[in-house]
Amino acid sequence: MAVSENRWGILFCPKHEGWGTPAKRWKKIERSLNSHGVEYDFIQSENAGSVERLVSMMVNNGYRTIIIVGGDSALNDAVNSLMMVEKSVRDAVTLGLIPNGLMNDFAHFWGFRESDYDQTIEWLKARRVRKIDLGCIRYTNKHGEKCHRYFLNCVNIGLIAAIMNLRKQTRHLFGSRTLSFIFSFVLMIFQRLDYRMHLKINTDEVKRKVMTVCVGNSTGYGQTPNAVPYNGLLDVSVVYHPEMTQLLEGFYLFVKGKFLNHKSVHPYRTREIEVLEAQHAMVGIDGRLMKTPVGAFKINVEQEVINFLIPS
Image (tube, rainbow, N blue to C red; front, side, top):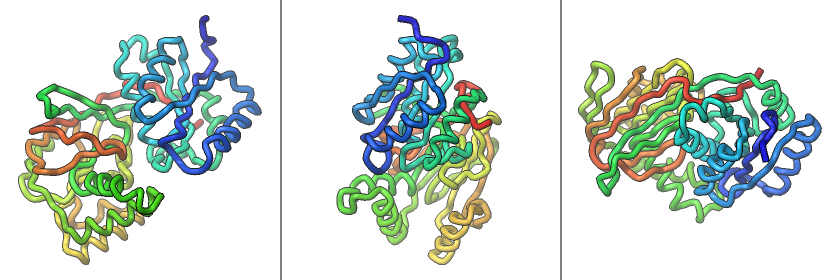
């Protein structure tokens, strides 16, 4: 059966995103959708690994507007699924977002808020479409296979990725992502981690110990605050190892949105970064730890590849 062009396919991602009772959250969203007269079909993901498969199924079934109800990780899975289809098919699909996870950095960039479903759905109905960029990390895995993964927000190399890993290990102690992240951050501060890195960014070459690197297609959880996903460029923040007093100052500037003002932060803007060496450094993508690449890898930007619904 053919799907109406105006009918939304909605993918609700409850088990791996957000707080509260999924059924109650969905009821609020459902009431708002109905009050706005939206025609839609609804499906719920079983787990984090099912999002890509379900988005692919929606595309194959003819949905031209696909709305993700979830956070940054779910949205990352959705764009990676879309990037696997032919360009002609992808260009006919528009992706939208109702933020519903703990990490909603990309939603916040556009002004979407978790607490206001009515405003979000009103904006989505207005159907203001913008072509957006994606970052892409190209690497070799431990089996020697060439791989790639797209991202909307950022790739983290070093400290922040290590915090993600520690947070995952400590989360069961606290039952809270936020508390486990703060605990992990404090532990990492006192471990004073840094990594031997060799980076090529434009005509510059960085070959020294580095604490963390953030490559942002968007604001990068505050680490690349000037990045935008529509200029064909990536923002890169390279953070050298600060003294303890500088580290506390850096945390203050981060909270105030002035991260780039810190003397240990070295910002760049580029189309591609080569990571020739990042000794023992973990890698995270859109807030999720990924398998650490083997050897050198590249991160570049692909311009205007996804149709995305933005506020009117």
